[in-house]
Length: 162
Image 1 (tube, rainbow, N blue to C red):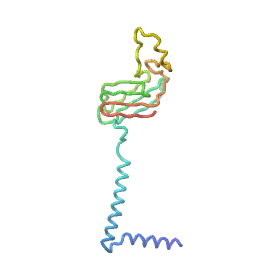
Image 2 (image 1 turned 45 degrees about the vertical axis):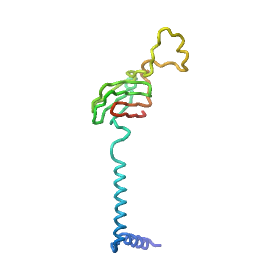
Image 3 (image 1 turned 30 degrees about the vertical axis):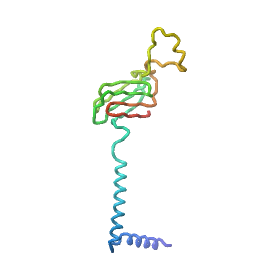
Image 4 (image 1 turned 90 degrees about the horizontal axis):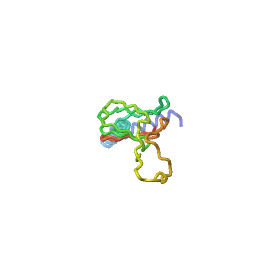
């Protein structure tokens, strides 16, 4: 087939689809246009909007400053967070009472506390030998590099891998 013949057959096919001769053809065109419009609207709706997983509107950045790991958290949302708990690697915890919208918090890793720290009880001997691993200190080392950070507040939660 020649390119001219292909073009002519394509043109005839399109004319057949969009022919306004009968009610059947008008309904066919309306259905095609409706499907195209719904497809476009659903695509636009799916690709736009806020990040559902980040219901708080949080921004988290991690870096190193003078040998210490730093975590910067920004409340880019439109609401104040209350009873905020910032958790690094599901074991190091930092608490904030209120975190205003637009506020930015810069933390070094040694400001986090080990969430599961249990001080030694008086009169107990040898309980340290029960653990397989060495008990971590109250604060992580200054060079500790976190892999996951979670922000939990009364208004929602957010988790990000670093």
